[in-house]
Length: 300
Image 1 (cartoon, rainbow, N blue to C red):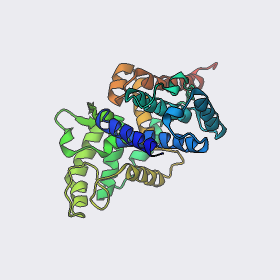
Image 2: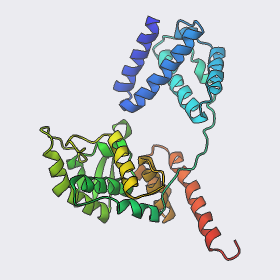
Image 3: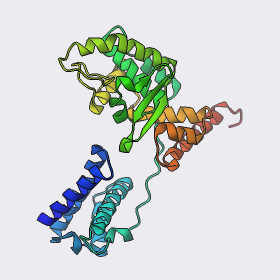
Image 4: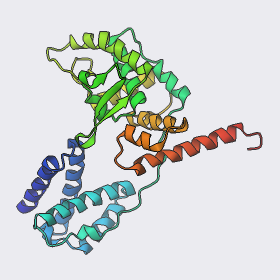
């Protein structure tokens, strides 16, 4: 299996150097391939060149027997298809057996979002007289004001913020950059946090960083830290709602579309590569319209 591991390492280097994928994305590719290698071991298949279409069909059956969601199966097969295409390009195999497999249709799940009343409870939960409270408020305001991903939020540097224009330079997937505007509430929360709370948090560490959001020790905030902060905000708000950082992104997009924003603009703000990724929010807005109709029409 030495050649198998070497091929995987070559592919990882290709994703890092040529494709410039994020570490998060690369981990998903690597996990999908390693899972398939385990399957190969069970089937006594020693080389990637030994894999046939029949083996791929058998592997698909195993994934379904393990009751993986269709979205998960589609992601695994897509990763393996890309991997085998790379092997084909490098002339390590003579054909790509995964090219014959059609991806299962993904479950059409409607993104969960928050209503304005629910948001207000969250915005009133932080104690802004403390350094962490000012940070939490600024974090919440930025996530809702911009709709950026948590990973993008954790990467924000002080120099990325332009208060005169009210924009943040966001470093997205694949090192793609975009400017995202923010409003007056986020502006006020940022000024308060940077002028006071952030300085107090910085004093707790001997290290110096330009990252905007810091943890209670004065270090850079991680995605896991953001989730912990949001969970604490919910507890303080005495709320029964379920919230994740991505729910704020869903809420941002839904509220914009509900208020008449065009989909292309929302796509650009979210940093979506394809419009189809943004179109899922039209299902949410239709659900919202039905809710308004049913609660407002005299003969609904």
